[in-house]
Amino acid sequence: MARYIFRRLLLMIPLLLGVTFLTFAIVNLIPGSPVTNLRANPKFRPEDAARIERQLGLDKPWPERYARWLGDLARGDLGLSLHNQTPVRDRIAGVLPNTLLLTTSSLLLALVVAVPLGVYAAVHHRSLFDQLATIGAVAAFAMPTFFLALLLVILFSLKFKEWGLPALPVGGMTDARGGGGFFDRVEHLILPALSLGILQIGAWSAYIRSSMLETLAQDFVRTARAKGLARPRVIYGHAFRNAFISLITVIGLSLPGLFSGAVIIESIFAWNGVGRLTIEAVDRRDYTLVMGTTVMFALLTMFANLFADVMYAVLDPRIRLD
Image (cartoon, rainbow, N blue to C red):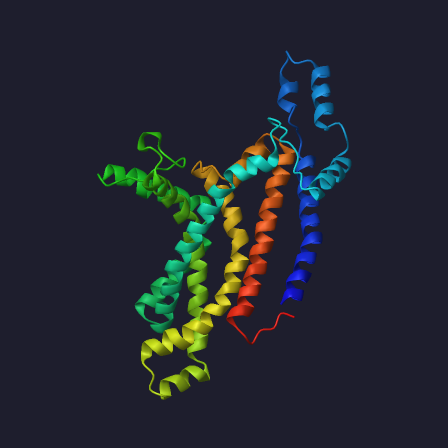
């Protein structure tokens, strides 16, 4: 397994280079720059704008700037933000825990709901519950992230307030009047985590249902039933254990969707995370900050997929990665 992990780590290098090259090219080919707004100001002299561009290195062709940025990245330096000249590494480190809190909460929520839902639907195949669960899973999976977030805001904030029920906050991470304690943070986390987790609930519950149905039809499950084992032991001790192994890979492949969905959710709910920081950097044409967040998301995705593959082999001894 150590050789497999080493090979995967080596393969991450060209993949990361490809991601950063395409991102750098796209961002720099978009019209505009960090000094575009300054040029639009009639009181700002063109020579001053040109001087700022030279100071920021924006007067060089973008391939040359990419090569210079890549050299700094090889030394572990993500550069300075073009907006306020603060280290990109510090900007990302300051909000990364918030993004990890949001994605981890939505991941745990999806697992807690999707796994029992899929197992129960498979065990009660073709029942009314199974049909409703299937319809709900398809609807949740097909619904756009921003649309689902707005629906949750309307229901749990606006409508709950009209009905006299406790309404959930819709913006920020804490309430200054609430003191910013643990329960205040949880209240602000509920709607973003729900918005991000419901999409995964639909996909994962449908997958675990399908995997359970396939496993329940296997010979070893019929043998366990013929031996007179209790029904819960057959379902959870034999069928579910084998069906859940394949879900690990699906979770690993779904993590990029969680990270990309966090960009939208953080913007909608003003959640101070890496996703919101990325949107602000794109609006300001802050190239170095955009590249820093891109590298962070790419590394998180690649390591998450590697972890899923390793866990798949750990849980299933029949699989050999070497």
